[in-house]
Length: 440
Image (cartoon, rainbow, N blue to C red; front, side, top):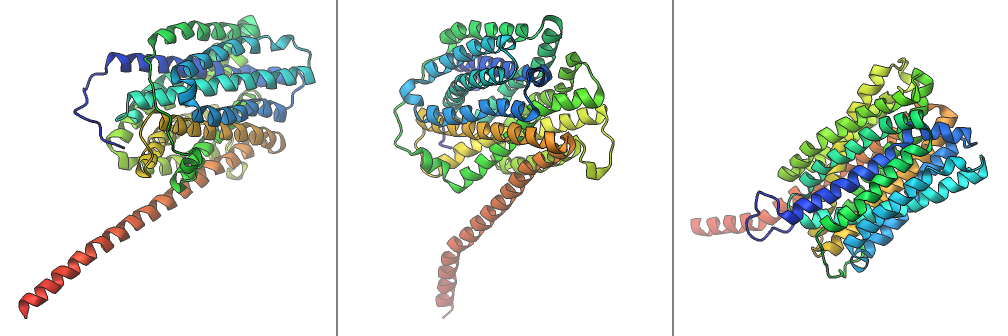
């Protein structure tokens, strides 16, 4: 990453503080709106005639549209304007969240399912716009410590994930289906004018660098697969975990959300430390990615646990595995964005908001693709094989990405070592010749 001119102040500027507040608001609001679905929507959708596979497709629809939107919006970030994209994405998300609360009025069957797909697709466009702009603005405002800032802001992501399930479950149990969505949608809409005042204006000259030039770099391809595998595992839990908890542990809907706390709390609390490590010790990023993938794979194998282990599932063990998953996911999610940026700079890409838009759009797109594959495949496997086997199979994504990253980084280190020895050998030969000449 290019060195900053001059010595960077240890204190944040006013613009940086405002940028962090705005980014924190979108992280918190988007995650709380997304996570309230977990405790009660799958069972509500079943009452309306949707099978497990269809529920998985409804969750996956959001991700697929988000994937396409992120690719397009990342390319056109500088033309649309980062600030406008940010606040308009929040506005759309707030309106659509309220709309989602009206879906229980729709007739059961195809009408309800079709409206779910439509509303989730609209929500995906707004979410993609806000998050693509947010990542780009943050990387522009904090060029030298982006991992630390992203890790710190993941506290608000985790807070949204923590509060969403129990709050959604409580509001649903107390007031019915509509109230959780209407309440949170209104909160998001209130934040729109606040962020319009807070966000500094960031201008940029459009870059000549190609999106596909970035996406087809071997290291970037590997990191994209890492993002995909991480998101696929998380996405698998959305339509399946609450149903498994309800059937296996016989918990009421209001308490199901509390089980989600294990994953969200461990992720949000560990993210700032992992971000600081990623910035202060950049060489650790590769090993965080590798070890995070392997630990996550092991945890998903133990989540059911897999029937081959012949271990009876217990609530305390289930929560403990979720805590470990939250930590290991942070080991992957925090270093991967600065690692892609570093790779882009190494390959001669121009620094600026345009490049940040490309990287942000690509990261969000890969995340969304995984979030489509995870619920879709997970819902099908859960229906056919049960949660225990389905979670073990889903862990294969991160196992594969962890092993691939380990092989790639070992090969990269071997190539670097070989090239270093080749570069020093001519000098050694000249010195040897000089010494022989002196002796004669």
